[in-house]
Amino acid sequence: MSNLRKFSSIVVDGYGRAPNRSMLRATGFKDEDFQKPQIGVVSTWSMLTPCNMHIDKLALKAVEGTDAAGGKGIIFGTITVADGISMGTEGMKYSLVSREVIADSVETVAGCEGFDGLVAVGGCDKNMPGCLIAMARLNRPSVFVYGGTILPGCYQGRNVDIISVFEAVGQHAAQKISDKELKNIETCAIPGPGSCGGMYTANTMASAIEAMGMSLPNSSMQIAVSREKELDCFNAGQAVIHLMKKNINPRDIMTKKAFENAITVVTALGGSTNAVLHLIAIAHAAGIKLTLDDFTRIGRKTPVLADLKPSGRFVTAELAAIGGLVPLMKMLLDEGLLHAECMTVTGKTVSENLKNVKPYREGQQIIRPFNNAIKNEGHLVMLYGNLASEGAVAKITGKEGTLFKGLAQVFESEETALKAILDGKISKGDVIVIRYEGPRGGPGMREMLSPTSAISGRGLGKDVALITDGRFSGGSHGFVVGHITPEAYNGGLLAIVKNGDKITIDALKRQINLNVSAAEIKKRQKAWKQPKPKYTRGVLAKYAKLVTSASTGAVTD
Image (cartoon, rainbow, N blue to C red; front, side):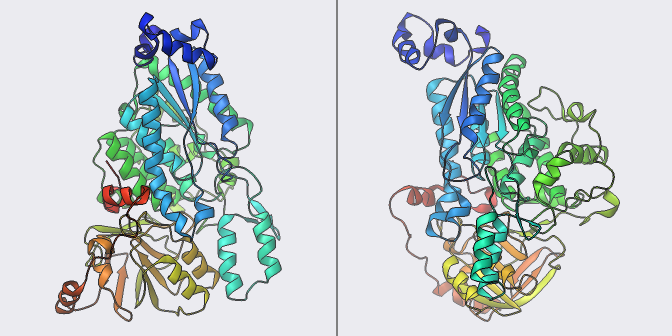
């Protein structure tokens, strides 16, 4: 397979590369291995989080598959951070930054070591877009493997997960549950390895990547610790060699139509708002123009069909049990909502992959039929208006209503807003404004899961709105608007909102507006001064200098 060694041959072939080969012999290379294509297997393993704690073993399975197909698999690591652990703290500012660090590190290692292809195994939220960004940049045959979803915990006969714990904090603050009940929920919600179990960001992005064609069928809907997931990893190792033989590279798969397929599937699943940010960023790396308006266009014709948490009833492990993602994709294909001709990492098109897929079993309630959709249009609503002249992202499932008018309660950070919510200082009709949490202003665009969960826990989910230039976790629900651009730090109108100002959020008109006179806005803008940077050295300072607007994916290159 010497013709497949486009990059590794430069590193190890010829008498002049004897020192290179000598180094590799110490890692276990034999004479025959130098004639095999080298496949970098990206392991995002760490003991920081249940999302990634099992991935070391899955990476070994990917190597087995690669080696069985005639390649030479080489595992290397990249970082992960634990969103659920850092949530609500200053540490969460590093979360979105980690996406860029992961992308840069995968590109760096693969480029330096001359890998001919890649298999990446990722779990927590930023692993997935980070690895896909690197794959798009490198454009060498690649397959992504999702580490798998967690099994739910059980409390008093109902499924619970990490979001249950966050919301229990709000319930405790409202004296709806006791110290003991909070402790009981805390101790049983996370039973073992795997990514957070609803249609939160990890499962959303895994589904998007599969729909895009960069994962094997149903990779996104398998239990983390299962025979199916081990086989998925082994098959991915083999698939990358097959892609090399067929000369299929990531940018052959990651076309504009493939991104449209991903948006369609995310919409049907009721997925996370983070998908907007990440898909735009991945598209940027692939040289594809993807905008907020693409989400609006596709959302207008795509219904929400999945009754999944956080706003629905079921967890993704239950969806995996009835067949996973592929029957839903077959439904969407048959309805004419997917591009059938898109190439995938199987070496086949979307329609070829789905040809023999059977429908979900009769009587299941997780995926609705088209004539009984949860929402007839998409839940990811792109808003514009004077508060978001460059766009904002709302998650409107239909349960929150479509119109909210209220009075602003302004906070300069997530922490101060959370304290006010837990202390009972937020009332019905309030619009909580959390600013200076954008990509530059944060820096890092923290997720507002703690405040939104506290709101839900206190029973105010339908009675208050929360708007921010930060992000939301896939676990957030309620009348929430994030990714407001321009962000406050860049002089967006969010920076001049005052307590008591009237704000209108209209999901039908797709508008978010500050109801203050033009003269008053001009006066406030003239008086506004940009705050000093919160960080002047280190990774957060570098990120703040490089990062673009959330509306363009918050990319750094």
